[in-house]
Length: 315
Image 1 (cartoon, helix red, strand yellow):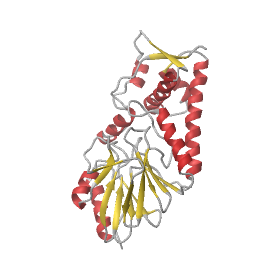
Image 2 (tube, one colour):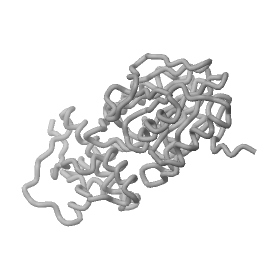
Image 3 (cartoon, one colour):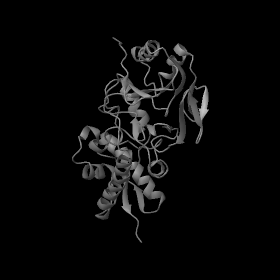
Image 4 (cartoon, one colour):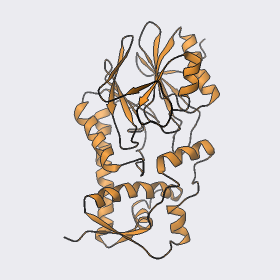
């Protein structure tokens, strides 16, 4: 019996989940293998550089009588790319990614390109918002989307400055909805596969609009700081996750400021101890150093958060 840890999701696609569960990674980062036929494979998001995880990719190919001909990475967050280099060394496959990723790669991928390995063709879709260097890959014959951290199999995505931009992210969601309405599956960077892409994308779009409406509703009652907004809007969420919520709210507020719908006034007083812990967490409930690195990358922990009061702009 094969010892392969690959989980078959379709005739072409198998999942290999990394052993890095945590608050930011759910059950772990999803890596994927795309079978192009005749023993020619593509690896998608090989994940963190964990020796046994890399070895599982290598062993799966050996057991399948296949070889990796390309390693593609959706974006440069540290739960998605570090295994690419050791996997490339072990297999000889080139690493392909966005031009702006913070790691060495062999070839740059850009909007509209097609990568063909055997009978499998991936179309490259620029998908910024969660990260500036994010790509989505569309497997044309199966009409399947590999969405990285743009859309997850469970829950929603963090969009936090400085790497995240709320309006750009919303534009990416609308583009996936409008340009790929016939997609039949979403294979996200975390969580289970999705078999109802149109419904899920519509939910993601609506969720962002509803959260922004909640921000505006609180501000309609008077000026508020980010900690006050978090307490009002995320009151049913575990308080350990409030620092993440604060950074997500900052993304909404930046967008609303740019559109001159909200104005910010820097406060002269120092934040209270509770406000400081929310705005400037040292680590948060993120586990080991590998998990904390993901939190720093996705949430911008370590970057300056303004201590300001926000108000609706007067007509």
